[in-house]
Image (cartoon, rainbow, N blue to C red; front, side):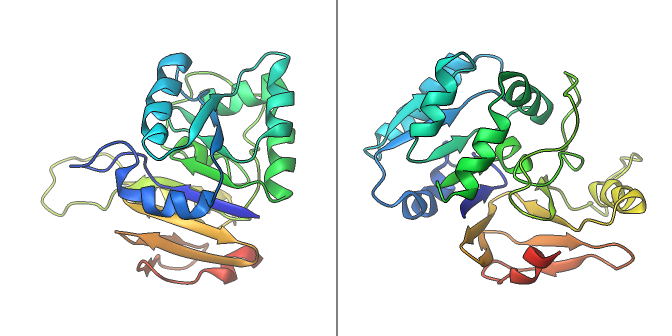
Length: 233
């Protein structure tokens, strides 16, 4: 498989996908036509225009995936796919309802380059249980694409020692997940991404990640680290 899983599509101080575009271009290689999955946002046409404008600057045409009868044909013919961010529950529910979830999984497993950001990264995991999003719609279940055997938590935020916020931190939420589940979680800080090529998995980007495992303290991982062992999780 060829997966590029971004924590976020926009980093502070830069434009849409600017922080990761070199990695995106390398991931896509010579592909000049990209199928975009806008299901995580309500205004899908506007979202597609935004993605289209950014990729047009790179000489890449963006085509919108639709949930109608033509969606399956478009996905079967796609050279590469980009699943955009937004609400993970909405994204998964629409992929399930349209019957496109299994086809997307099959195409990615067959080697079609898969690019995900935020929600699009969440659904590459076995389930969406470690998303940060509110369940604004009810999917048929939490099972997602399962392209990697570990969970992912994009937009990971470290607790601030000076904060007066008394609610749960992201770390506490992920520890709660591991009280009921045994699957490790890769918590990606903004500006970080995972790159899977064949049997090799690496953490890349400007920032690191934390790996949460059952009954262990979280492990700090810097960019450039090989994470192949997680593929055997």
